[in-house]
Amino acid sequence: MSISLSSILPQPTHKPPPRIDASARLNSEKQTAVTAYSSTIPPYGQRESWVPRRPVDFGDGGAFPECHVAQYPLGMGERGTSSSSNAIALQLDHEGKPKYDLIARQGHSSDRIVH
Image (cartoon, rainbow, N blue to C red; front, side):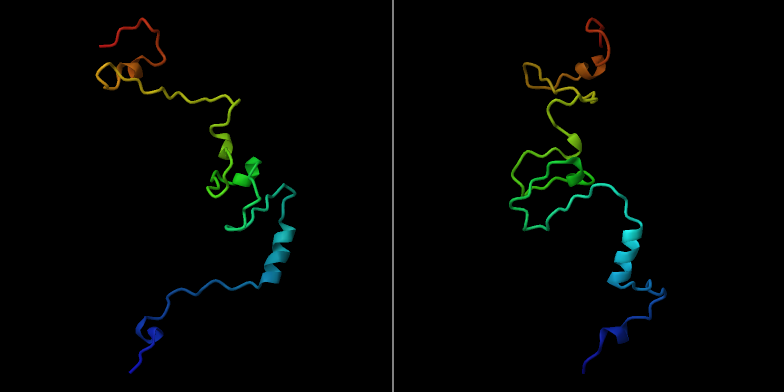
């Protein structure tokens, strides 16, 4: 006794979108293409000799862990660029506890008294 899965499941409530064959899709992409540089990133497993160098290689910010070179997606961590971060380094007192008063003093004069 064999029961098919389609006989058990209910009928779909929505119709699937119409399929477009590959040639029609390529023609529509050619018409709407922008004349900007597009990076051709090799597929995963074939990136032995490829090195991401330009910001466009990183797309939306991801790095490539299989490429063993220094990578700066979106310029993060790159030397020679100014940072607009207001983060402060964690400093510890003589007992190894964080100095929380530094957070309160940030942006104020050094002689300001913090209680």
